Image 1 (cartoon, rainbow, N blue to C red):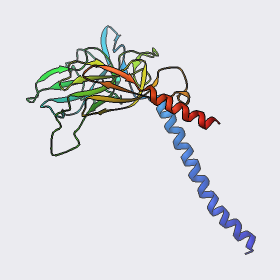
Image 2 (cartoon, rainbow, N blue to C red):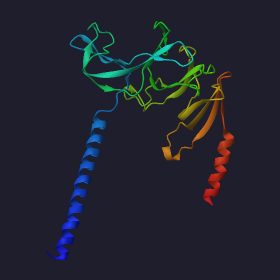
Image 3 (cartoon, one colour):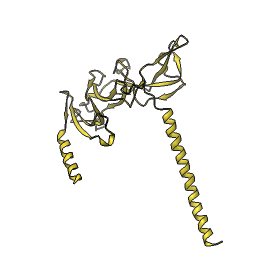
Image 4 (cartoon, helix red, strand yellow):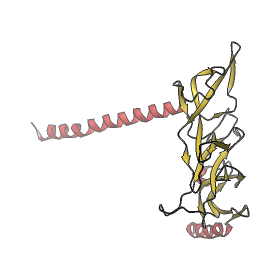
Length: 257
């Protein structure tokens, strides 16, 4: 066997598996993209009832897990998500929540509401009184696992109440704002407005929130400027850290030289 033929065999032995692997990767990526395009995560329906043959049906029910303890409190919370049924369910079926139905295939990543319980698991309230998408429920924890940090007094949430793009669901495609409540879910207070929050964290012994955000606009993400602000819990005042903006702007000028 000539050296040339041996070389061809070696090359084919390398190229053919690589081509097969590349083909499989492309097919998987294409299938995944198609699946998510036709089966997007469900949001919160703005209208949840339909009428068929004189019967009132619901398209979404509730999904929830076991109660979770609230740090620095004797309370518990149950985070509640909506789930979309394959087939709408009769409202008169007797199962008001439809929490155990097996015919739900779309589960939203975001919560719909939060239920608060006392130490005896008695309901003491719920966070919201209307439909919403809750993208984040932030429960602070102390730095010392052996000692409770009594400075923790609040929970934080990213919440959207409106279907901004009017697609029939409240979801991640709609604008979420930052809110806080006390450890019982009361005194819900809006922290940000017209700001797209990137990150936030409690600082200064949980007396303030450090917020990373961009101004809400139609600009592409790459053209938005990341900014910072501090929200003081006692005064309920939001202070934008414009001095950091100026410092970063000066560095951008140096880059542009």
